[in-house]
Image (cartoon, rainbow, N blue to C red):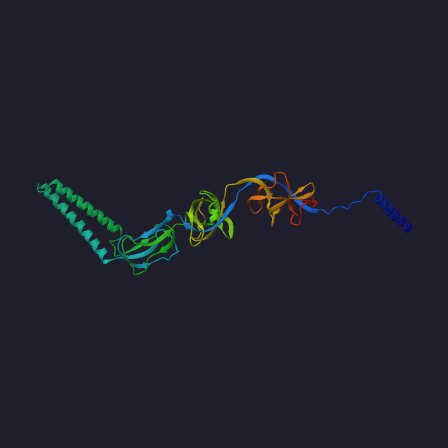
Length: 349
């Protein structure tokens, strides 16, 4: 048996020698890299601009609490940032001596106008007063009555008045402390509603040039995007904020957030730009080196480098503006160690 094996090996060696001497060479199999590919397809992709901001009340849902008459702040019953219900007591105001004197004077003027009108009516029945006198007296009484109603609505009839919240919301600021003497028209506090909110965003200047008013977006908390809500850009600033170096923008929400979030909460916005057409490939196909951005395609079992220009990228896909065409077999796996012209063979996807 051993002699037979020796004879077989010897015969194979002689045959190989004869083929070589006869001009026939035996080539070794060229190494081939294992890769996975996908077919490049025509498609479209929309770039997303990311911006951060804070929640705030809509300007139409923000109200200033204004003092209607001169008064002294007796007590402040809420704190800045506190959530309050409708008609919740906010401040307690006492009238100043001058305001009390003005109310007493208004009451006296009203009482005097009533007496004067009654007197002229008696004289008119006796023919001792004219119609013009009666008309003037009636106007004087009406004016005095209007002034008295206004004084009472302002709380002048009371020595102490409690100012209440006009609606449920959050006290965003307080400009009063106990003991302050305030004049009529002074702003004592501001309150913002939480039923309809906006997001004040900060855009990078280059991003602000891309987005347009009414662009669609989603808003979510940075650490929890499960409760995202849709909206749109209602305004875009035209200058850079000197402190943040960002361009301000305002996002309006399509629906109310429930439960109502805390005002001032940080939000992340994903703003969608108009879609762009091109050739779609998985992002894993994209490579970069000192010469630029490129990918490999499988052309007849060879890896061929293609320099490409990317129009839009997302987490999963890249939209190629130029460099490849629809139908190319783009190498997506095993491409990192490839060189141009290397033999490749495809394995199961």
